[in-house]
Length: 80
Image (cartoon, rainbow, N blue to C red; front, top):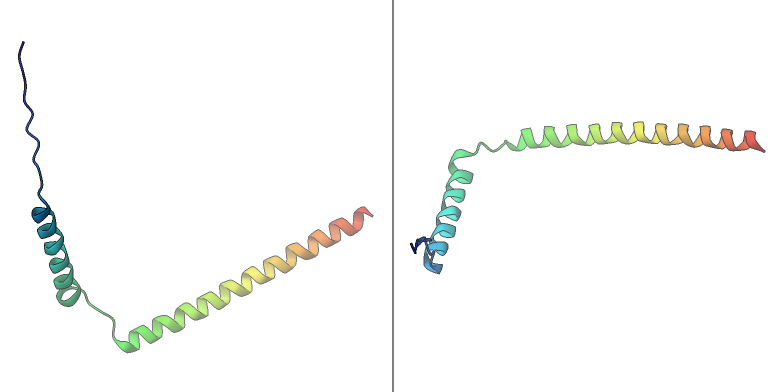
């Protein structure tokens, strides 16, 4: 009979913590040195644009809701 032994790497807690620590360090470096953050003015402009788009979408949904409500009321009133 032939025995085969499979070696599986065992990660110690120290190795796992060092990987987590390295990940946090690399994330911090990327967020502080590599990411281009918007200026305050660009942020304000984007916020205004999002608010206007949300308002327009809300108006469209309201019109659709009112139209469907009107059509359903007309349909049910015609059945009586």
